[in-house]
Image (cartoon, rainbow, N blue to C red; front, side, top):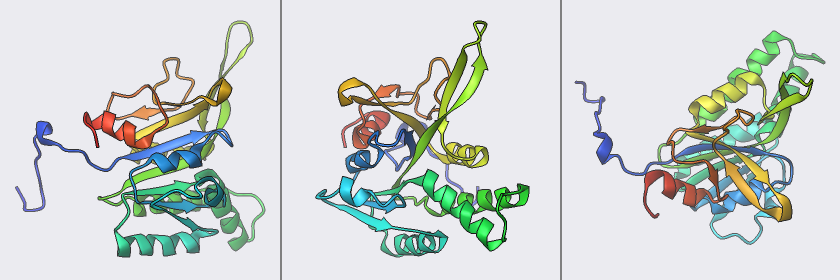
Length: 230
């Protein structure tokens, strides 16, 4: 066994930082939910709304970005500070569209070809990986969209709810995340995070196998996953 290789007994594994992707309709409370994450929290804000939603919250720091250049600076800041328990990228759907627009402008194109989609995927993949730090929880938020799953025997369209991202970026994000949840709002503003979809109509992920329909509180979810109180 090399010095860099480590074998850990499963029963000895302690709580570790988690990676979670939360998506939902506009106004469902994705940004507000970030206040429930372990603090201090750094919110990387692309939608320019977290300063209003999170105003007055203790131990939350907001960095508003507008471009790929800005996110490069944020990554350098995180590497130098290493003082945040949670890093949250709020508005990943909108950021994805902005990056695509930048790529099209640079290449003097009006519509993307296979090549531009490839640049987009590679760029976002690298950003996701660069935000994964060993001592910080990582949260992404994005918008949701509906897509046709199938047409039933009565010609009814059965829809699936998925993150509003390109297929390649969705796959990358889901692969590296421990959890992916849909933030659902019921009547009277009751909100739930769905980590399980019995009929397959919501695109979700739960690496722990302990989550289903949960209270929208990131710290409580982490505690439930690791079987203890924080």
